[in-house]
Amino acid sequence: MLARDQRGVVFPSPVVILSILAVAMAGVAWVATRNPTPNERQVTPAAVTHSPSAHHSSYSPPKPKHTQPSGPTVDRGKVVVEVFNNSSISGLAGRVAGQVAHAGWQVVGSDNWYGTIPASTVYYPPRLKAAGHLLALDLGIRRTMPAVTPMRLDRLTVILTGPTSTSTH
Image (cartoon, rainbow, N blue to C red; front, side):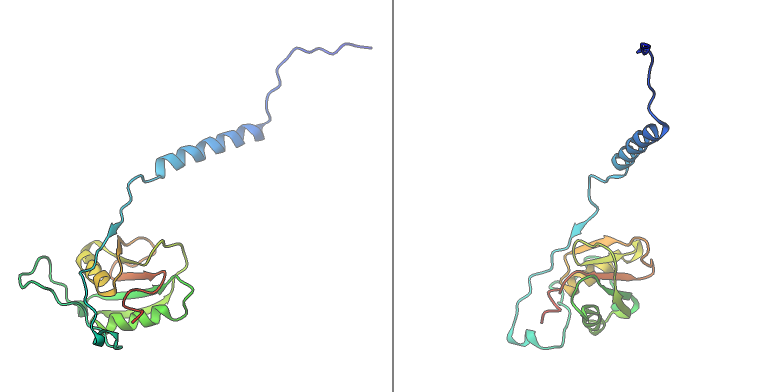
């Protein structure tokens, strides 16, 4: 019987080397692209008192308490709004779109949104930031964010994950 030579080095196959490199690259990409500080803001609506007439189907936006303007004036009728439903509640976007139009905004459509949104949100392009915050207050939505792709940058985009405080009345 012949004795085997036990000397030598066994190199891993190219597949193993490529797999290790792919895992390392994915780890580097994850660390490089994670965002430790969220760009989210909570919008706190002004205190609203509910009267017996508050349960009517008509909706009017809250009136400002002071007479001096504190920021840019928003003409609701000139701001275009789209409303999307990201919940399992059938017809929610249509109902909220009706409320948005009744409040004076220019609604151009409502549809379903496919994706993952953590909470009902008003998305705004940079030039419509003040309008986005006002619409969030009108709807009782606490979350506003800058618009992202594939959202259009000429309008406000509302994505609903459940009923808003105004859609339950």
